[in-house]
Amino acid sequence: HMPTAELQAIDAAHHMHPFTDGAELAAKGARIITRAKGVMLTDSEGEEILDGMAGLWCVNIGYGREEMAEVAARQMRELPFYNTFFQTSHVPAIALAQRIAELAPGDLNHVFFASGGSDANDTNLRLVRHYWAAKGKPSKTVVISRKNAYHGSTMAGASLGGMGGMHAQGGLPIPGIVHINQPHWYAEGGEMSPEEFGLARARELEAKIAELGEDNVAAFIAEPIQGAGGVIIPPETYWPEIQRICDAHEILLIADEVICGFGRTGNWFGSQTLGIRPHIMTVAKGLSSGYVPIGASIVWDEVADTVARAGDFNHGYTYSGHPVSCAVALENLRIIEEEQLIENVATGTGPYLKEKWEQLADHPLVGEAHTRGFMGTLALTPDKARRAPFEAAEGTVGLICRGHCFKGNLVMRHVGDRMIIAPPLIFQKSDVDLLIERAVKALDLTLAEIKDKGLYK
Ligand code: PMP
Image (cartoon, rainbow, N blue to C red; front, side, top):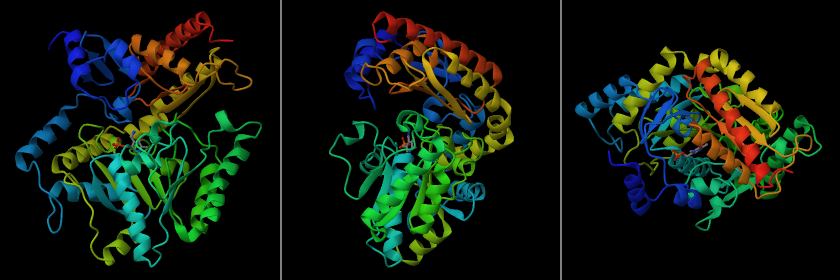
């Protein structure tokens, strides 16, 4: 390939990046990733980078799997595309829908395919409103989401989101979507115990339903564990209370499993780990380990049957149930099962990762460090006892730390001043050791730099 500088110049001239951090990108240029194998990325300079984020929370089976390439090639030769609109179907979509229905808990037996998580959440919004209309309750339209959530980048997806100011761009949210607070004890719990705080935050849902009138509320949507918002692991009291409130007020519960789904929390679904009984689950990323674009809504029998009885559901994407995507996703699920990757998260590498990661809390810069399955989070702070934020603008120190990780060949993300990981589910103990070694080095360099700049007081 061309020299790195040339690639970067063309990238800067013609490629509009999603989610830029403009100044950083302009100053340093993009790091060009050329190849990947297992848990390691290779860049255009030949550097090997440990991927602590599984791509974008998705490459669960690791990179460079021949089986996946072969299934894709075979399916492309046999039937590269056909639609599933109106009265046609095909074997890959049928087989994948059946497998997902087998894996999904309870009466979640119907699958509507999308191209990713954002559009699957758009589907969910139309689906729940259409459902309530079919039930003779057309006023039930409002969807309640949470501040600091991430549910995608379409108009509806971004409206459901609420991270900082970024989701407001473009004049959002669209009407009919409201937000309550998140169960983020470390940042917002004040003097309350985590248990008290979890209950208080869950009861904001009940208060919001009362304010809007339950005849106007269609659904509540949330991730079992918030991912992009900073891996916010909710207090134990939170989800049981949310479940009670949804059941008591006839509110559909949508679990966004785009990150948590397919093993990341140590079960097939995060809803199982957190004890949630959703009516709809959104899935994407881990469904194909990111090898091909695909998403889906997994739908409760009662919702799917009601919608079907009501007549036509005038909704679908050209790539709904794309044959290559479905065939590759099915192979991905086979690999997860055969290689017992969920067991690796639950009882293999997962407990070792937890032990090592939580020791990072001893670092002078770290206020808390936790994992749940293969999701890890740590809070950077100048004052552990008070869980205090830095005086510098939120995210300043996080960005510095991310920079040191990246320079030290570790992908770890920052969300404000939290550092997060979501490694591939194939991670072994030796990978954990390397991750921790590089993370500690980056934390040390970050501490030195912020002391130097007068940001650590
Ligand atoms: N929901 C959640 C919880 C996500 O993390 C994401 C992607 N980060 C999405 C939805 C959107 O999925 P996609 O980017 O595939 O549209």
